[in-house]
Image (cartoon, rainbow over all chains, first blue to last red; front, top):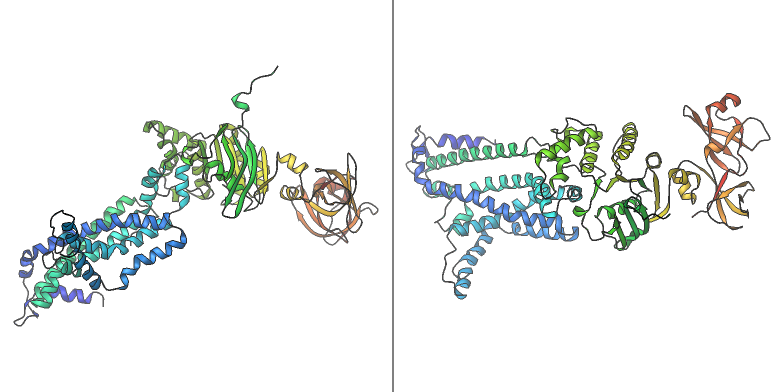
Length: 263
Length: 368
């Protein structure tokens, strides 16, 4: 049941476009040869997904650290709920809010009013990145929060006891021991970002589009299922390679530690 | 001839009227304690008595709400833990799981500025591993070590820094009994050979008695009595101390008469006990007579002591411990050495016997 759709897509990718769209049986590598036509989509995805993941991690870590180690237990619950609240409304609606904020009457207007000239925010890679960080931040915050929350606080005392000042304790104890959380969160966000299409469509305005947008276009607009399937298969392959490489790297970094498990 | 006090006479650490409040809870109340250079001192008391708070004030994890903490004659109230020349062996060791055994042990030396040469650190680690009898274990991971081995690593990680005070927070709580016994002996000999002042926190009286030069007995945030194990055993200040240090039988009553040498009390049913008292008592005051099980003997000959019945017995090898029951005094323990069994024979369960003790053998204790 789980792999059946994948098999269908795989078979389709070697076929051709039907006369009235859809799929016509066949066997050729033509679809794969044509992948270059969607190069921009692949390039955008391959750049913005890792950059977005990194941006999420960089912003989520201090937030998770603050929640797990600096906030009293009472206020912690409230703040954790606040992190989830955005999930209660659809990303579609929230993206519209961002369209307004980043659009002509939002921040650019404010900047122009302050006399810094006019800048374009909406429909740029930056706008997509903002949307990505906004949308995926909670997914990154929670795994990091959990790993920091589970960190044995006595280890921090032990480090201090052995003469290590707080800043260095963070680098030599807290950070390495919370890396599993960062790794899990990054994996989660990265995989989802590779298939993202809504945020680029809304905030990229057709100028910054992902492979996901290309797929929507191919399947729903031009109804070229065969070529669409080839694009999808290519995306799956890219993901397979990058995720495997990533897991290898983190496993090597962990050095066979028993306290680190990745998926 | 009067000599100037040398460094060796100065106490290594002191608590002066040190108190710690957590919200409305007083965890440590007015602690006054002098820790002597090179001694093995134990804080002994039930959980929640303030012994861990006292230790944490010495380590710098807690700042006293009132009073002072002194290290080597200097007030260190505001000195953070990472700047105190003090190291701790934590209750569950708190070893760094992401580091090897060697890296755990080297952790303290690596914090020194200017940095020590790596070769010197490696040498010190190897030497310390040998001291704690774990030679060649440096490359191991923490989780590959058994509980007893982890404890040695925790010990090594602390002593490599040659601290002025080594603080041990219930270090043996997680070990099984046999291992604990071995570790107690080892810790004691290690303390002698290193010459480091050890401060141990424990709720195990046997542990405190067997290892310490002095014991500080605590209750509800206060120090009850400080003394050598022998002092505390022979001259407990009150019933609480007598109960905590060794086994004892208690008989409560009221003070009949007090003389310069002995004090006499009688129980509600008219049984008399006499002996020395460790606090000044007045006639009519409630008090408790304490008799150690080994101070009582059993005989078959009637007319001696009080008539009792054997209700339980535990064979301990050199001794046999009898739980006996008296009509009005209730149950109490008697420890009979093997050689007296030779003359009196063994007492069977349910048999009658007479329990005797020397007049004046009891300790008369205030209840508080």
